[in-house]
Image (cartoon, rainbow, N blue to C red):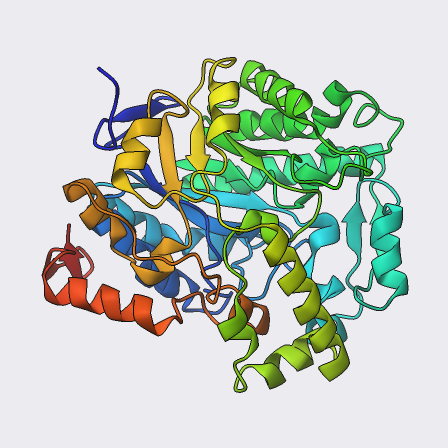
Amino acid sequence: MSPTLDTPLEVGGLRLRNRLYRAPLLEHAGNGPDAAERLVAELRPAAASGAGLVMQGATPIRGYEGCAAPGMTHFDDPERVASMRRLTDAVHAHGGHVFCQLAHGGLRSFEVWHHEHREAHPDLTQRAVSRPPWVIRAFDAAGVLSFDVEVLDTEAVYELAAEFGERAAWAEAAGYDGIHLAGANMSLFHQFLSPLYNRRDDEFGGSPAGRTRFFEVVHEAIRDRTDLPVVTKVPVETDAPRFLPHVGWDEGVAACERLAALGYDALVPVRTTPFWDASIIKGAVPDRAWADASLEPRLARAFGGPLRFRLVRALSRASARRHGFEAAWNADLCRAVRERVDVPVFCVGGLRDRAEMDALLGDACDAVGVGRPFYAEPRLPARLLAGDARAVCASCNNCVVPQAAGLPGTCRTPSVVAERLELERAGAYGRSEATADGGTEESG
């Protein structure tokens, strides 16, 4: 029989109670003494309501170097990582498992667009795979972005890979059950894989195999330090402009085959572009958020003034119009990969409906991930696992824009919030009970 959302799944020797996971999101927990507590508040509801796996959002391994957005929790300090034991214990107390997403943004580091952050950290440089491509340099020349680039030499690449291995060991000591590498969405991994960014002539460039070499040495570094399962996103640049060098469908599927053969325990293939744009959050144009008068001053300060705010807003709207919502937009790619590899394939992107998830399992993928709908329904698994249900998320992206100003991710669309409240009143998310650490939580 084909698996359903309720069917257990084994990933790298770890048995998950079902095939539903909370995909990595931006939690905005920061790096203060309450970071772990804030992450518990953000992630425990997913585990308590039944998610088999919870993915913590991107954790930059070098702190502000390579940090891609405001509010990310840095994994550059062993004491901070050790403090996450409270989070992992909270997830385990509800029968769930938790992976951390180790990350480095490279050219995606947020000081390149966040004016206030660049002023506060003027010495930050961006580690690059090669000299930035002309399209990135054009945005720099136009004043939309601002780069201060240092190209990684071969020795520096190995040093960075070793740090990923060290951070994985810290994560294991803190109780994490696995590692999820931020392999797409214009991360440094993505930049190594993409021919637009990677024009190296050493072992980390040239052929498609060379461009996956960074994934390989990071995996080796992690395996040298821990046996935790390792999962990675793999970008396939199907939405890239045709005139730019890009990772095509066949090359992306072949990269997944190569990574499975190298020992990755699961893969998350995703369709995208070479850029950090609306291709990673397909949906409606977030006009409500951009028109919010109370938010505009904060965004203008972040982008470097009213003129740049208007420019960024226009570019964002144009990008969103090009990348409208698609249900299960990565399903065909996941199916093509699953036919070629013998490790679990995780599907994420545009998954909202329980029936649709069950139809994909055993066909296109082995597990399904849900991201933005958790901003509207932190306890969404309780409804999905109870039977036929659909997330209330409208895929409007009004939750995303305020994050550029450092505000937490939460649903800001009144009609969606009202629907969630009505479901709460009807008891759709379960009942309250005491938690392992003395707080209260809903029972899924």
